[in-house]
Amino acid sequence: MISFRSTPAKIGIDATKDVGKIAKRFEPNSALIVTGKRVGSSEICRRVIASLEEEKIEYEVWSGVKPEPDVECVKEGIEVAKDFDLIIGLGGGSAIDVAKLLNLYTTYPPEDFFDYLPKPFGKGIVVEKPLKPLIAIPTTAGTGSETTCASVVKLAEIKVGIVQECLLPSFAIIDPLNITPPPEIVASSGLDALMHAIEAYTVKPAESYPYDSPYSGSNPITDSLALKAIELIARNLRKAYHWGDIESRMNMAIASYIAGIAFGNAGVHLGHALGHAIGGAKDVPHGICVAIVGDALLEYIKPVIPEKVGKIREILGSIRSLMEDLNAPTSLKELGFDKSDLPKLAENAIKLKRLIDLCSRRTDVKDLMTILERSF
Image (cartoon, rainbow, N blue to C red):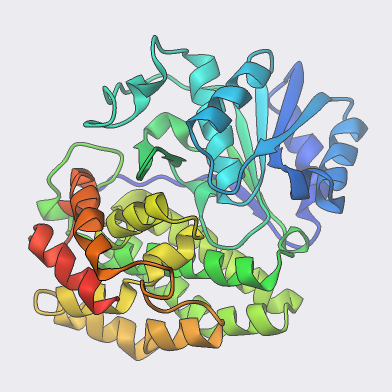
């Protein structure tokens, strides 16, 4: 059985001018713009505000989102967001992820913050009712958060994803004029989109998917989207990093969106399990954390899905080579890890059972150690 969802979107140059008109469809009393400090003081945010003012929509800006949001960041935002009936997530994946969580926690406040976190970190309580409307406006091309029902929060030693149907944004606005981050963020977010596409393409197929969840495994629809995303990233990420031209930015924005649809329906697996463990241990951008194990991951799953891995290699070549061209670190050693750290990373990653179980090849801690050692 295949389930499929995507966020409706307006995509194109200067699409931001229509934020107010789109927001007005939801008949809000007031809107909260959830963003970080840099974007909150930028021309991008001013364009969003101008559009809301044109439609006479009351608003407030909360710019308290951190690059790697933790529990305290989300709790702070919850206190601000209680009185708003429309939320606008403006920024990279962190801002949009936090906007989703503020929507969840203020619409249906739980008894304890950890109630919505998946087991073994929390109770894994699922909300099956709709939330307040949420408009997602990405300012990076990578996370795909604008079209997924997932949100990530950092705990003490690991990042954890909350995945619920109700978190899917109501609308997305994808405007290449908004996607002007520094080159290092272009690199890390683009690598994130790449791994979304690769993992969605190589996740366990729908017919053998083990869980009843918002994800349903790889299928012909998600495979076609994932491959197109890999192709767009292979052709445009280097250009976006080195030149920042409007065409490459637009293509990367589209790649991020369709990779988000692919993994938002199919799921992801070992790359993100290991990436969450790596990111929980070091203050490193998420895209680097997942991509740094990418080549070793492909070699690990090649024996069970050689055709798919071969297709990825044909389109993309080496992930390490791409990372070198983006001046990104290419090994765990470069991130400051010691070989003695690897067992702890593997132990933390194996806790993310729903990701581990989605790999097309059966995986245990020893297998994760093999991938980490090859990535060292």
